[in-house]
Structure formats: structure tokens, C-alpha cells
Image 1 (cartoon, rainbow, N blue to C red):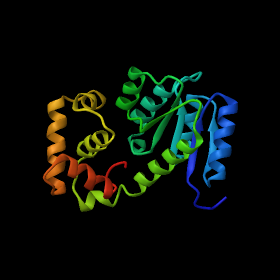
Image 2: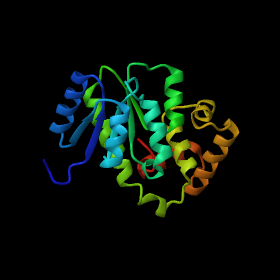
Image 3: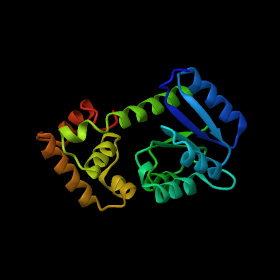
Image 4: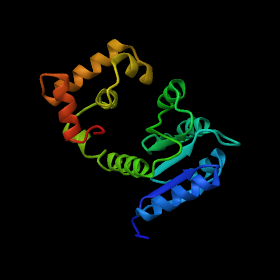
Length: 201
């Protein structure tokens, strides 16, 4: 195992799923540890913070939602740590709740391991570049969030629901981002932000 391998914590109560995730990510060069429930996962994060967390939603003792909520409340320094939910419940309300709590992504079970590896790599790259771009282009956090969700094809109304803002406020942030990026249209803003790796591709 490389000394600088990124650390991933998999919080999953299903032993078979956890074992498969560990096997797949270890083969791809990550250092993977496992927790069996949300409380065990929370204690593990506080004791030895990972670079990224994969967490099931439905777990004994503490759910994935409760874990993320408590983690953010207890330790604001973990707000930027990528947090990806694993879930068999891919319904609209569940996703909205997760986004509002600060989740970075959802992966639906059964897990597609190629997608899993791509999401993990993408989220860790985003963290790595987080200290570079803010100094070059002064986008606010809300502006980056709105650009990211727009690039994912979400409407103003959907983004407003995810971020708990009004559609008019979403439009305001997107126009501000466009001006800061020095382009004439919102489409150009999305393209420039993606190329500059300010947002997810």
C-alpha cells in the first residue's frame, strides 16, 4: 500500500457489500477501513479522519442522515470532507434531504464499482484543487454550488429546493458567477467553470 494512499471510510452494516467495496477500492490504491453503523463511523471519523466517507443510509444505532447531521454540527472542519451516501432508496425526497444536509453524492445499490471508483476519484480531486481556484477566481460558495447543480441539468426550481433558496436567488448567484468568470452567457459560464475545474464536469 502506497504511503500516501487516500483513506476511505466505508460505513456499511451489510458485511458482503462492505467486503466488496473494500476489495474494489483497495485494488485501486485506496486505504479502506470499515465501520458497521453510524455511531461507530462517527467515532472513527473523529478518531482518525478519512479523506472521504461512504455511508449507507439505513443502519442500526445511527442512520446515515443522523451521522452526517451530527458530524457537521460537532465538527465544522469536516464540512469539506467528501461524504457519499450508499442507498437502495433513490426517491426524490430522500435525495433532497441528503443534499440539504450536505451530501456530495448518492450511489444506488447494488453498487456499480466503476461508478463508485469514478465518484471517489472525482470527489478527492475536487478537494485537492479547492485551495487553488478560490485565489484565482473569487467565486463564492453559493455561486460554485449553483454552477455545479446547473451543470448537472437541474432547473432553478430544483436547485432552489436543494439549497433551500428561492429561484430568484439562484438566478442572482448564477449571474454573479457569470460576471466573475468574464463571460456573456450562463452556458459559457458553465463551460469555463468546468474547464477550470471549479465545478464537477
